[in-house]
Image: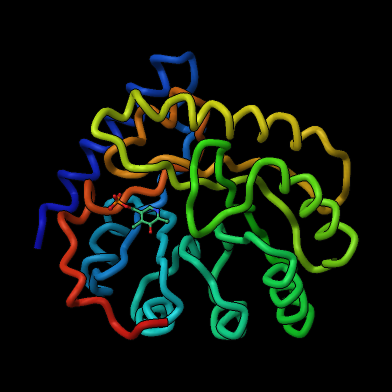
Length: 237
Ligand SMILES: *Cc1c(COP(=O)(O)O)cnc(C)c1O
């Protein structure tokens, strides 16, 4: 097992440094430990070292691990198919990867059936990026309005993005900055079910730059748990 405790200490130091470097506080940044391919035992070690939020990108992994992991906040951060929402609706605390009205409506329906309100983030793409997932910044406002109108059991808490890969993370700072500008703009919308508090951006290789650009929720996997072995990933959904 990797030295999860020591790695966490390093990541927290880097978060604090990046935050303080731009006049913010380390406590204002939520560390979401991404535990895909990791065992419940490893996740519990991270929780013993103070991790309060964990992220998974596959429904199957959440279902497999949920009962064996100590109490913690669960984040669904990966692409989510509508037919699988029902499996995680009462397990996760926030879904980061909402990129269509169809998905939001399904989340709404399942949340209503369980008499709960689900927190979601909209997964966006900045102008330059051509990616399979995420909505363009131009589409974001329309989707926000549709969700507020049609999804009474959904609360929009902010935006999420996955930056393109870059050799030098500084190269993608502009990308993060664009998303931050949208976050500030849409956060001004006044509505009882819109409460922008989370800007989810930054992964192991780019979280310091993302924080400098305004991120307040970083999703860090390999820097905490070590390199991933995908042959250990269960299921395919
Ligand atoms: C895997 C994953 C992460 C974490 O990636 P690392 O590079 O291991 O930090 C963050 N966000 C999403 C959406 C992921 O799928």
